[in-house]
Length: 186
Image 1 (tube, rainbow, N blue to C red):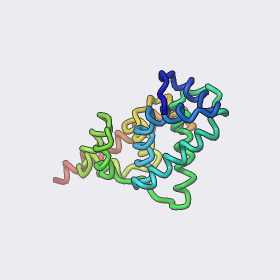
Image 2 (image 1 turned 90 degrees about the vertical axis):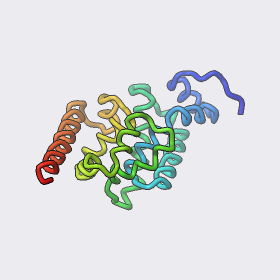
Image 3 (image 1 turned 180 degrees about the vertical axis):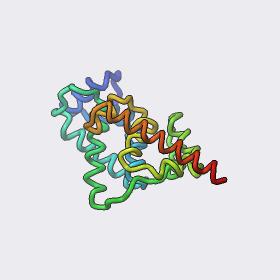
Image 4 (image 1 turned 30 degrees about the vertical axis):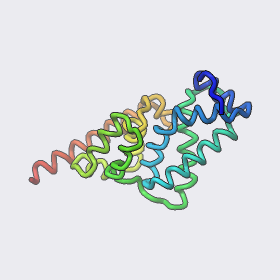
């Protein structure tokens, strides 16, 4: 496949909408790592996350023409991935995986946030994160694993930015309280 000069994500998505498979490949190359990390956090299983990623890219191929440009392309991609994951995982009703499950992601070219979370696997921090409610863990996955800004997290989850901040605050407070309780009991 001949590579052309890469444009912005908006240009790539317009090309995808026009049927350009090469543009879809470039969009995949740019965003698959972060989307996969998020999906792995939701699914807890590498193969399921890979399948959902493929479902996501197929949905992007089919619905690129519906992108209205009101959000960033990355935000839209995470929204598509989230819907695909929830459609697939609804049948399983599986909880979000433990932070320790991210340890095997280190060989996937993980970013600094992912490496920090993966390094925390099996630690008291990971155990405290595992105790969080799903809606708090999902915010942590989008902020620290996927690296999305709070405004983008709000858009992906279809909640106000204030709610994202609140969930992140409560998640951090719960982790800190759990760590303090562990220190006292030792």
